[in-house]
Length: 476
Image 1 (spheres, rainbow, N blue to C red):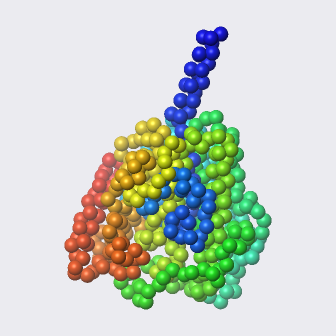
Image 2 (cartoon, one colour):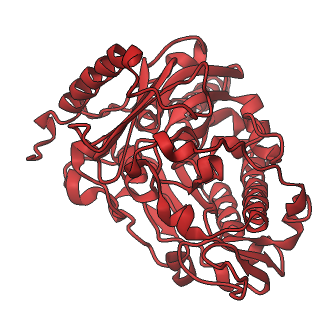
Image 3 (cartoon, rainbow, N blue to C red):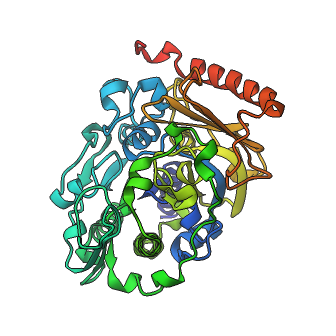
């Protein structure tokens, strides 16, 4: 009997050890969420208590950057592990088309190593609102998942008080489909809409698969336009209390034309009241998404999985809310390229890390934490040292591209350098981020900064050469 008990104890210990060797992964990503709209970061006008709670429990990265400030190429990049310019993936696709069938995506690596992998809603690209309205898979990569689930919702057609605040100067159009700022203060509860359904399905999968290692990717579509949420989420954000960002006279005079998104600025024809309503509705959409994040995180606790689950929260890119009179994304300015990033690892202390990191770093980092070997040609960095030492510096600067991979950002502690085209004929921007963090004064063409510009141009040339190394078997 004693021998039997010893063996049972040893077997039990082995099972526990085995589970610890294979931690669960819960990857949560919001859509179009700028770091400036998360109260754990610098914006206290927007209230995100559930994301804030996670930030207080994990490592919050203050300088995390997307590799492309548009949904499709950003997601293709961090899921494949390569820069957009390495795979020439710049569109609304999964990226599989360009990396080939032999390379494993982030979640596919886990699937092929004994994990249950599931996608709930938008991880690879989905058109919002159209793919959400139809319940489509969008540009998803089927090989990346054991199972995948879509969360159909009414989007701009939801029942409720609606108002179109973009391209509607007379205010006569109440709602419009597509990638525009339609606001709907919707009737009904959270489960009427996509993100409520996504949280519900994620909770269901956590309960169902809690006894096996899982990689669960949960994609919320808010605050992506249309700004749709149950009307109760709008109540804390009356538009007439919204404070607009600082605007300086002649701000565009030193910004190259390539750096201005005319579609969502001048051509949007928004009045001041409409702009304030857009910001209030964005915050309401964020609050609705934050509530769903809280539900999913609470389910981990209820199922006793917190001690064996790595949690990641981020966004695919940022979002302009009137800074420089810009709206939405695409821009390489700070509000569009900087993202919130929180990583919570069991046993690691909460911290704030100010090192530059990129979304591209998630694949090698989380895989290493789970003890999985990745391909040697992945282009992200393993940032695990920052989880033990938040003062550890991963990168000297962050790199992002836009406009089909022809516009470039290099962001260092002191400087933000933007160049349009490799030959710079379409313009450049240089900002002193210590003296001018809002990026109002372009120094790129001032003689006293010529050496700084030359230094960044050389770094850009070298960075592109490094990215385009033909180890991927791709012809350029």
